[in-house]
Length: 560
Image (cartoon, rainbow, N blue to C red; front, top):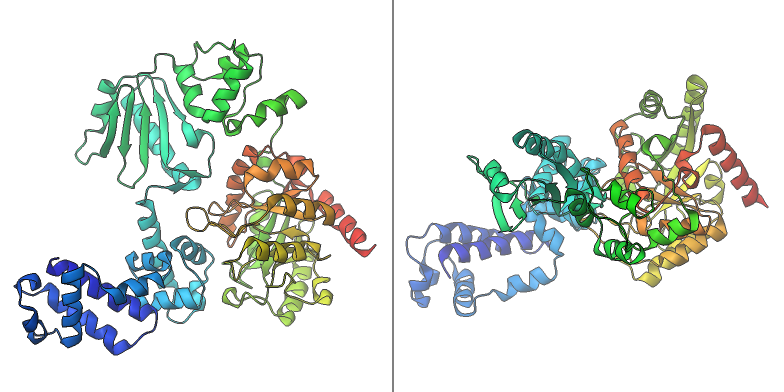
């Protein structure tokens, strides 16, 4: 083990000790030892052990640990601390702009344990509510995390969507009059993307020179009719080249193996020899309407087609109102009036303001007196902005026992309640289900927010029994949110069909913390399409009159 490796271990030990709030004098001494070891002219492995403690900047305690490292290859005190520290917290040490002290605050006060959670907190302006975190620090941390995560190789759909036009236009520019089409996970609108895939009619020999630039991407794999690159941002680019039967190649690389196998079994006489640069003709030859790429996931789509003979899914322009949004009364960036005018400018008919409840102190959650003030303010705005309407709501924390954050008398003052879990996310399924079922059974709960608490590529979320939750929502007339933030997309689209079968409404909600956040509805729609959601089954597709009628009927049912 060379000096650099030893210095790295001491430096890490010092940082983790600071994160855990251990003896600050020792932590500083190990940091100083790391600094001095790195600059030594001689290798410690070649120095007699009895002379280590006499080297300037290395005391007796550090000398003993150097011996341990040289003899065993590890430092037990460091190993023990690592075991006590969540992996995501350790990963924060890679982010420029946050040192051990700030990481300690993030972990122990904000209860954040992964970079994805931290990035989400930045998006919600939560860091600024803690000592030592100003707006500039939050912006720098956000940018540093974005850069770091982009180099890990897995991307949100929204992130790949931002890159896609440039990549496709480059290929089309360099290969004019050549058949080129996107395929794979991106074409299916998967929530996360590891590889951006294209089908290209030209051969490897024609395509490879396109990437032999001054700063070329890394070529990971090359074989007949396939090139796999790793771009500078970490995204893998898979090119299916030499497609002599373009339609067939596009079809076979778009659907999942389960979908392709089921198609071949159900429609053995389908003709794969298409003549166009798409795969429509393959479905036509099988006597089917074209199955959109986003539905080419499972064999179940064929059963649905046999039952219904057609399908209609929700579209972006089917969203009529913004449900679930936060203003600067809690952790949003804009005033309620600015949010309302943003809705009006985008053609929406109504806005549901659902700031955080009082337990969410980290998000400036509303105490009862502030709720009354906000409701008076909303009344004034509704008079000013009619016929547009702002509805009074709250994103109410589901507490540890499943109760909601306010008394029944306070909850009754809202037009609707979105109930969500935000704290104590490390739960068994039994604990999670107890909390959520109790919240669903609360007569004031209108919408169950982000069902599992997951953050894509960052946090799995707590374990839940989706069937039991959907059944409980059906029994209690509770709507289930599809949180449209591209890092959430929760509930998962795979459970939408069961909800539809049980007559449970879904609500595509942006969880917007700014006017720009309204645009996240798009990603909720793309995810919902994969589950076959229709506008009739989506609450945020209701017109203003339909939405008002829904709320009135629900209040009547609650009072029976």
